[in-house]
Image: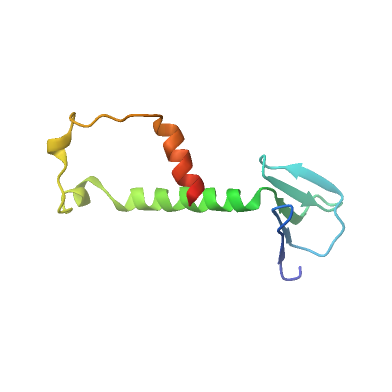
Length: 108
């Protein structure tokens, strides 16, 4: 197998990863954004990622948040200098919290 090659098609927002210089015989949809390209023997020869910029951004965000959550254990929380427990029950959210989170995510 040759070295993998990656190409980004900016206009279409597609990343194509060529794993082997072989003809594609079949495709398998892995998810709504990822398609695996297979040769005649059913071996992986390429991967196509659509809506690549959003997919990569969201994947990196999710991965990073997961790692951060694992780092912050209950024993480490007590080491932080800030204590907001006196605000519990005193703050009210106004508006659509989910929409606000999506807007913040999209700005990133």
